[in-house]
Length: 216
Image (cartoon, rainbow, N blue to C red; front, side, top):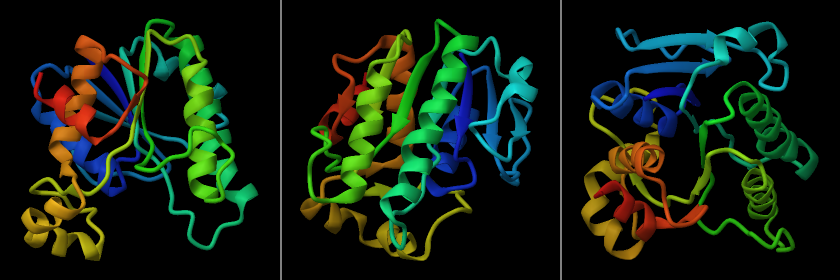
């Protein structure tokens, strides 16, 4: 399996990258990002792109891949809806559309979020915009499109891009997991790989679905 990964400079993307590098099913990883991820590995190659909506100059480097794990994202805190939409909807759809044209047989796995609003009509801005992105991706004719909605995630050992609060999550995870069901980030990554290998029964995967897929 040859994988394009976005978001390797963030916590989720870094965790997925570590599993891809460790998993024998994954032959090669192309990390597409605005900044270097700070890691080297025989499987890993990096492509630095200032704007995911402007890929014409690098299209030749984005061909012959089986999957994209889209883990890039940003918090909505402090952002107005138009700004958040550019990052969470416009950029995602532009990137996905380009990859579809270059890799018609690709599977696209998109990290969304728990409580995303599929109706696109709710009062919570971030959930509404993420729902719009999910729905638009599901309409694209990839081999498969899977929107992952993880909740609480336990970082993978060896991660460097862990936000301060998540160090506490590592310690308290067994207790927090009883109240806010989540999973290890490594399992989220395994579920992504299995979605490409084996498919999944639906396009929007909640925590129980992700857990099941990771165990296959």
